[in-house]
Length: 638
Image 1 (cartoon, helix red, strand yellow):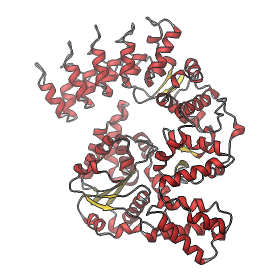
Image 2 (cartoon, helix red, strand yellow; image 1 turned 135 degrees about the vertical axis):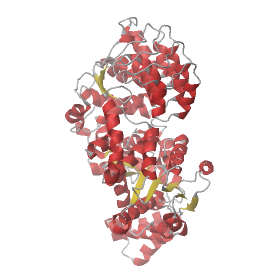
Image 3 (cartoon, helix red, strand yellow; image 1 turned 180 degrees about the horizontal axis):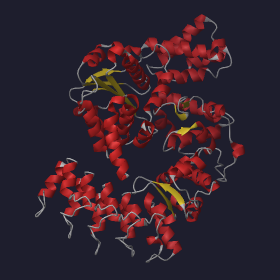
């Protein structure tokens, strides 16, 4: 049951990332943080925020992993068995919403701390019955309830890489949530001066790589490298290498690591000495020099395709996924299994720019700074990278005829297709994202031909009342907000009247309007409303476009829909709920405001249990919404 609940909460497993990260640490490095006065004071304090900032490449993530590991070991002892350790890693490759971070913290509580099981189970049972998922606010309230309880003597929460969070808005949201919890909060990031005003009582410290740590890194990397060990048999030369890298790395673990990779290519002592005196002393110089090495090798074009995928992927890829992704010919847009290269080759041809997480099997660029430096280098050769990636995705999807196949559930789809075929799950989920980010994806013949073939494309979404459906081309384009392609499709395929494309149904009865409304694609909604669409059409669960938009909090879409003449703003779903009720239950105050201003709204309408919108809002402590409802003449508060 715990495994099922954990999977329902989120797929994110920060423990796997922690194991990967800590395993990359050279022994005896980054432990200095545990001994500084700021850390010791924070450790014994009741609450408080300790924030470490450092330049890119200073080893902040490794330092966080040391802190997490130390706390996890501490929690295993009898003396400290009532402390709780929670943590999260923000990664540039996985732009995780705040809601998912909160869910991942709750997952850790569920999996590692049995005392929290009943509280989490109550939330799970409630949503499992209703086939819903808790909003961000409810996840936070559960965390707050656990933090306020007496389950733990103390809770430590570590967040690495706040600067790598999806946006500055997400950074602020995370901060505001965490500082309002009764926890000892530890953050690492690049300097973020704009956020200091949100945490006036935070204690700050500088993350500066110690000379001893750089020395340890160099000595241990040399010992692990057969090439460098042989070239540096002379102790004096080895000391010179240590000193030179220590000076040239400017206190950056990352730069020191890349410098060692450069030296590892040397074939003789003379060559090594020459390279040693020409070591790049800045990250931009290091990246440029490394890319020069990439381009000079026979497999340079393959290496650049690997880097292209890692720069523009929408989530981290496994090594197998990456191998299959680059096996698609960029010229013919065909997949050829004979083009698959070995795992070692994929890593080797990138000259140290690519890192493999052994625990998860995920491949990433060696550091988030690589994105800033490598994109301008590759852009002249690949002016529309997302188009190349989208083309590779649809090529893979066509190979397995996913544009016209039926599956009873996502589990059947995963078991029959994704598990045995690398690089199929990724295209299935993200091909439309690459089209959206492409400069010319909508005009690509390869992509448009694939879209036109789609008749029963298996689609999984949380924006519907059910998770699995099968879409035709018009549904895909409406759901994903690809309006230019949608306009082209309707223009080319003709009839847009009643029974035409704009009113086509999915297997579960959803129309393009419902899909666009539920996913918040207001431009598509406005476009569809120019045709003879059935505004009050319902799917097999009785949901309308307005119900979906209200449930998911898309106020601008709700505004567009309620302006349509003859729309039934009070229409209930098969389970008895209605647009205003959905908005009140889920705390969408902006949607409630629009609905209350709509002519014909029944503010006292009841669901099958007899609950009104006021009762629903009161049950969820939606104070702002309750005030709005109280301002409505004739509202029933009983």
